[in-house]
Amino acid sequence: MEALGIHCLFFGIPEYPLALSYCADAPLVLYVKRPFSFKDRVIVSKVGTRQNTPHFRVFCEELIEKLIPLFVLVWQKE
Image (cartoon, rainbow, N blue to C red):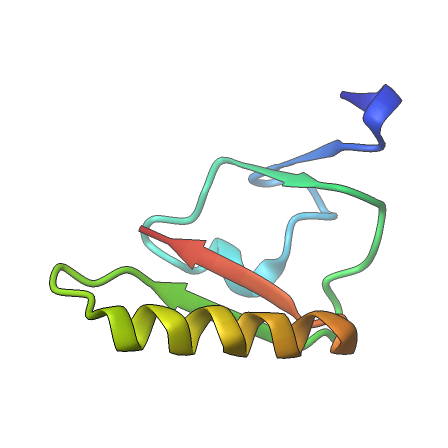
């Protein structure tokens, strides 16, 4: 993974985002493409739904595409 520039952040280490560690179902491992700090970052969380409509799916995809250039971290939980 390191050859691809992917790093693991394990729950409990100082680099793991503190705010995320307060979530009851926080992931034990985060895979990040490049090293960066979670401090002072805008983070948007997307939570899945049981009855997702095609309109809402398109809305979410367009929103995420518009956030990418702003270097916003998008978290998806399904």
